[in-house]
Length: 476
Ligand code: BES
Ligand code: MN
Ligand code: ZN
Image 1 (cartoon, rainbow, N blue to C red):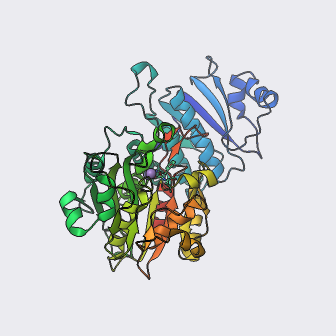
Image 2: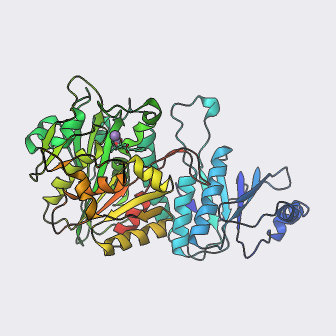
Image 3: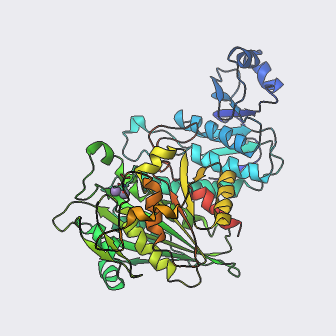
């Protein structure tokens, strides 16, 4: 999508962004409606709360099919993000293919938020809908009134990266399984982005015991994908991003009830986020080397499925006793953490995973749970999340709870019991992070898949933390 900065005349949607401090409808527009718009602001008690809107048909009063007033709260970058997202979302819901967005000023960061939100708000997954239920995406967009427009293109790149993650999450598990998820990564290969895929033989010879165990119950064999981004200029550091790529989580022999299984195509949301991030690094001119790594497997109940009581011996020597085959994400993430830990140049490791129902219970669909082994790094990620308008909430990596993971015949077991379920999952992962590496774990189980839409996000796959991580990587 290309956003122009001269006003699109006759756009099907004319969207005027107002702030709480100034509810004045532009005079010419109000006059065209005989003063009805300002009357509507009064009678509907429109206060320009961020994300709120008042929309009317043009009815011949103007050349636009629709006119909308969109609230930006205090008019800061976050308020403008919500207004732009709501306008773009409204355009999509009505199949309006052109948007003229008028904002009351904004700096480069605000422009970036607006560009991102226009892409994000316009997103739908409609591949399998009958034509009558399909909607039209935006084709032409203008944004006017910004003080600085330089961030618009970067914003569009951020939103597009997120859309890729959302598409991968939304695709049914018959379409996205380990082989095709790996192929989606391979498709992104460029000179600066190399992609390597490990099949079962390489997993076996390397010793990816967790990934192999989880994948054994399925006729779709597992994969490990290693994407490497090399910056054009001198690299300013080396980062590893790791994603959970369980393309369907039936729970294995510890089978899930149907109600809990129905959305489990989203269990590769971490891998999807990694692919989304990797897809935008070159465009955004990121200056660090980034390794994007994910393990992909289907957690099924086939005749060769891994069993309760099995013991895995990992690359780093740790042994794990399986107590529940539905705690599978941590098993394959542990392989990836071992792999990244063996790379000497890597200083920071971030993993993303739809890891625990406990994180959903604790924080709902708005917040990702953040765990980190260094407070400075947690603070850095929290600041990036604030900039991207995403919910990120730090949880304690409480080492006293390590006792809950102690096993009888191995170092640790793969579950810690009901209490503190999201924390013990993080503690499990910590066993596979080498000493000296800065590490953060993002449990995205809640925000990866929305059960209902927000002001500007459609329900379904949501691609959380793609924008946050890109904002962090751009700052390095
Ligand atoms: N994929 C699930 C976690 C999940 C739940 C993601 C809801 C998204 C929405 C994970 O593999 C899982 O099953 N976790 C178990 C762990 C338990 C057996 C220790 C859970 O949370 O119940
Ligand atoms: Mn599971
Ligand atoms: Zn899972």
